[in-house]
Length: 195
Image 1 (cartoon, rainbow, N blue to C red):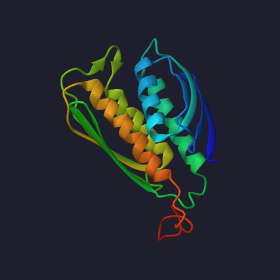
Image 2 (cartoon, rainbow, N blue to C red):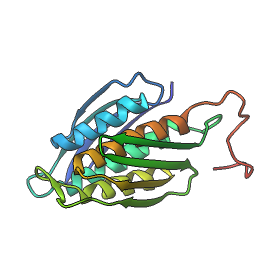
Image 3 (cartoon, one colour):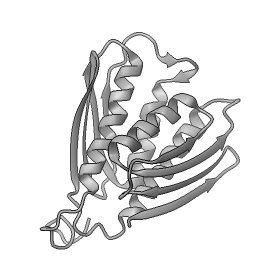
């Protein structure tokens, strides 16, 4: 079982996360930010990962610290759970429609963190009191701490919720593909000898 447990405590946040990459899509997520809980639940279900996440933060000030720190913790957990990365498929891609919206993810577990984020949000920049710009901050923190090259795109969509939902479903599916074990792969998937 490829599992990880990561905790992060700062003056702004207190986060505990356990991850099983070879799970069943089970999750218990409480970030005190309902929209983020919903998005992370979708990622787990579609990635078939098991996650237990409890996060407290200074959300009375802003959601930014909590959202970004959860990205840090999730990235570290994925990296830890992958261990030596022997036999992984390494690359993952998914395109997911959500009613009128569509989103695509392409990723490489390369050890070279990089984020390209090309998601156009139509009019409103908030869902309830959640600032949609924080999604890019979350993904940047996740990519930086997991060592993943991550390309995120959405070419169209009218409903902001649908666009971001498609992003998180696609992230789960692409990550599931990339971390999957290919029985034909000997060692790690690179000609360099090291990722």
